[in-house]
Image: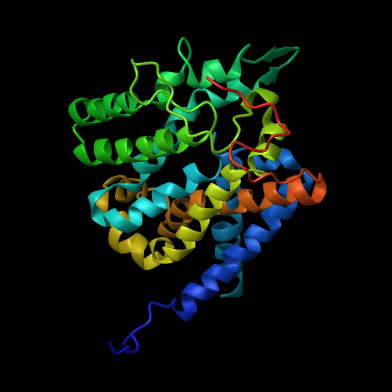
Length: 67
Length: 239
């Protein structure tokens, strides 16, 4: 059997990676807060609210301010 | 009981089922069995009163109790109501898949679930200790010290393997198109916020797995016990 390279690797685009890095930053802050104040980790509602603020609201506002 | 698996399983199913499921009922189904019960298992304080089940495992998984919420029959019943009562076969099927995933995953612990309720037999694999009766924090420490936490890690790895389902292109082409719920909410909520909401359970499942692991093993030094039925330093409940 002969092996051949895949014609196209399923890899994230540069934009996908940029978004991923942003989420990693938000995740790092969430984890630090959660480890220090463990009640923060208990609620999915708190997590959703945090994520909407950190990953959507803040970047949207920053983009508007920089325009 | 499981912690992060119920957040992450819906994304794994989404990867394979694409337009055949709607994500919102899939996720609601995955959360549904615990929605009504978890607060009473751990207890809450209302002013001077503490509301808590006298026998948390019995209340959560047993009969008499709310254990029927973890049965395949309950998921099917709610699915039938969604289909025949509200006219959405897509929501019904998606809910049932999410619900059944939860019910089956919870058979992994020492209490298990009454999958075929009203037959009250508990299906349980005994892979990790059920410790809900010890309270939220000891339960978290035990769960993230045993095979339950490892099982969650499998779903996290599989979630990252399925990374395409959380991209904006996938959201636009599959999630948004599959279910009229998203265009309806999009009348008031911008698309960027909807995309963030769609990713939220993935974010929650992954980050809290990491945070609880750090909390249990770096901050509090609970010992790992990855033996079958462990960790054995916590008193496990049985049916």
